[in-house]
Image 1: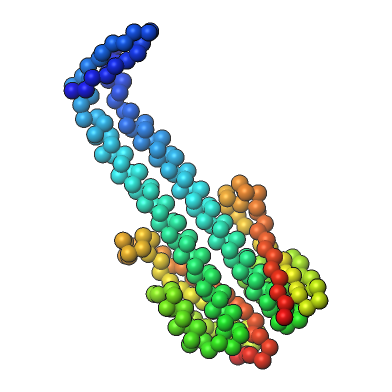
Image 2: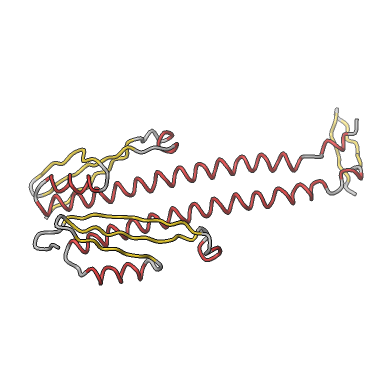
Length: 112
Length: 134
């Protein structure tokens, strides 16, 4: 047996392992990016919905703002002149499943 | 010619690399390194695109909010284009509110590969504030 020829392919095996790892990293990065963008969008819409409700003095403004952005108004409650709005949306993708966050929700508060 | 020392069965012995092995690591690395570099480049591009989308998303909501408060659309448009160059800003006022759409071709690797880009569009609709309207 020529033990020295066993070294052949070491770099290939190493490269394959490295590529597999990097591909997983790419997949995870893409999934996390998708989730982060969706999360940011929901948070921004929650802000807009809360401000709209506070300015117009009605939860219908929050509801129409949420609907215009394809998200759902989950809760709208008043405390004096302050309004707290919760909105949510279903999301898809592996990151949402890993994080057990198929429903992304955000809360915002506004008043005048 | 390299020399390896192998510890086997408690004794140390020297082995000599055969001439058949010469160049394997270099040849395999020549394949592996570009592949790894490519994967790293793709990951970098994805992070760059995601960050650009987040920035655009934030900007379009702020712009829509400003217009709904009564700030002139032209001022908002020029301010947005100053902070986010190469964007197309569309302002569509309706009786219910204002819809601002921002469109931009995001270069995947910034200035490195400006020809390779993907179109991204973000939109925000904000109801008019009291006393402001179309």
